Length: 315
Length: 200
Image (cartoon, rainbow over all chains, first blue to last red):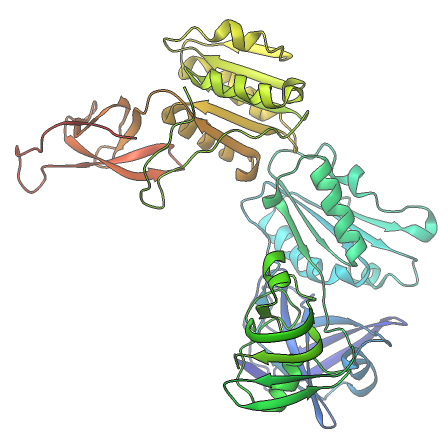
């Protein structure tokens, strides 16, 4: 995993809850380019705790002069977004990992329909620039509760194929109406709250769209929960995972080697074998198959937790 | 005649399953020869699949046409060959919207070509189903002259364009909708292995 120290070049308040951050290389060097939908993992040293949060890149994928992200403050989250909002200011150094894309455009599509809800607009801001550069047909639908909360309004260009749906103004987004009568070869991408993703998926299924043209990204952060104990067979350690800590973070704090990439239950890098499980794993990932989840033989330490007597992992 | 079972081979060799109904949604159905029976069986499992179907049939030497027409699709058309059917098939693809399913049934030559055209028209692979029935003859592309020889039943065979003797490979090109034929006597000109019938 390649990471580098970058400098916070700009901080802009978009709405009371959302800030935009721009990172640049301290010596002005060009950063690796990426593709629309890519994210970076930002490392935050918050006292004793090292937090690593993934954020979609919102800047132009072909512009290596800097990376931009938009962060929504989650006061009931684990503290990463609060740290970004309250402790990070212009000029600060922050460690940023190289971009990874788990939500890329499928360029075999003849048309791209992008459906965003709330802060789920972020990956589409970069995709928009990629689609415009490639001159590909697309439409973007952005749903938010109110004008005041819609951070995307300041970041979206005015264009006929970009439509804003504000439920407070009686213009609620209707996935069925968007997907009806689309031309052959259309792919649909959705990012936002679980309800929106499920709504779009249901509409696509009802209209007989094949599964291979539906793409979604749910921004998962590790859910807090009750503390639990885990035993590692290879390292011979027994650890306690704190309420606001993920299992992955507990492993890292104990210096246990474990690969990771998205830290949000989507990429599969941190998949770990369960040697013994007396209790219930709370699977929160989008990676394991339902059968694997119910068999309780694998766990994704980035987002999943455990409740019960004993959990033995092959780490 | 049931769905043909092919012996396991390399990864690029297409495999086919029984057609599964996607319900009363817009559908394009294209069959040749005994492929008609795959559509008849499909309707026996779910009659609603015909409600918005556009059926095109190439009888070859069979007489399934009357039974297929009697299934009551809103549009039914017979063509003497795939070439004759091509314009109609491409118009159906051009008019299709998202949510349209394609059902293909019959020989590999038909399935391969129709699938390649459908994907080029924007249809997602997930919206296409194919069931093999009837002749196991292959549509072969000569990798040397690039000419396509239809209905090849023996291995090796003679390329109908350049005259080379070609070995029948299981390597299938989805883009071309054809298997690949490679010169069998390149190193030992004139020494050709005995001709065999192609097996499923």
